[in-house]
Length: 193
Length: 193
Image (cartoon, rainbow over all chains, first blue to last red):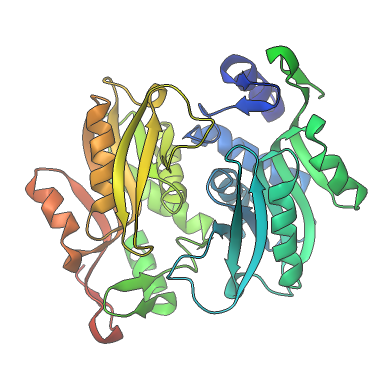
């Protein structure tokens, strides 16, 4: 079974719809994690972005880390995760963006230390979910501040009805979503792929 | 070169000492991550805890996730990461602990959803650092609330001079540290192993 079909099967069996727009996949993606499945997900992103010369994978803590790590492992490049708000041990130059969290209803600052992204880098942004695109926009801002090249964005699940992915594609950004969801209305998960 | 020697080499070359007790290893462990090295670290923990019947790896977001994920991959068991403070999408029964962050100077609540740890689980706690043992104690509290069995604790770096590891060992808990640091005094990193 392809990793896309594996993911859809997991989402069908273990996903829970909350309200009209939240899909909980806490059992394998972002609270409990299935490491073997994540390795397959990482390999798939590496396959899709093969030959694009990626030098860094960028994500944001915490739920993006597992997917980004396995993608970095498959591509054999370092992974950088943006930190939410500035910890006291992060000194010196930083790049930063601002992200409104959809599920936590708050705005957080995300930061990357200046040493870990530079003008020579070709960056793949990886995250677990792409919904309104808030996190992606914050990370893109960081890539631009660093003067690095954005190669594309990979997401495990795109909630297409929240339009973030299409807004990014309209800007000419390559967005690869393993699973696309058209609607969660009435508690039903409608897959588009 | 063994993974322990690899880690010590990286710490020597890239670690930065701040004050008398903080060691920054942001370049490969907890901001930028070296996925290939993390895989080796995960394999080493799996080797050390071989035959102990582990069913789950438990860590806390965010910097423990990479190490825990690779350990879970090597052991072929799920990884659960405790979340800091309760997000609005985490409903139902939860286990929780309280952790004083050494570097951020704040107390945070850490939580694990009730579904992902149970009385049948044999748990390995994994983290990047073991210093005063605050995070470990919070995670142990969660393991006990779940009625699960604690198999042991694995840490990449133990700051032995902060005594958390020895306090845990005195309680009969098996603690495996890949690198032990005896002192950071005067900006010098003193390895004990």
